[in-house]
Amino acid sequence: MIIVLGSVVTQSGRHAEALALSQAHVARSRLEPGCVSHAVHQDTDNVQRLVFVEQWTDKAALLQHFQVPASRAFAKALAALAAEPPHMELFDAQASQVL
Image (cartoon, rainbow, N blue to C red; front, side):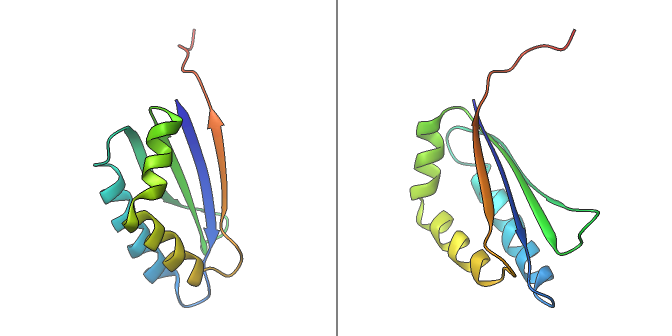
């Protein structure tokens, strides 16, 4: 499984626009093949920061997601609303049960 953690600090006065854009992206992404989960969260310490948490079945599904024209358009539009460059990390993970 691939875990994606991302974040963006939005420009002052543009946060609501960035959040709405992100929520639409999340809803669309959840319908893609290989998407296990996809969410955007509000950082409670920095109200201008949005945090993305995603799970994909494998790297191929995530790479396909990156190629979707709407995903590319989202990344470009979100970057235009950012106060600093967006940040993203990918993790190759295996699920395990908590004892």
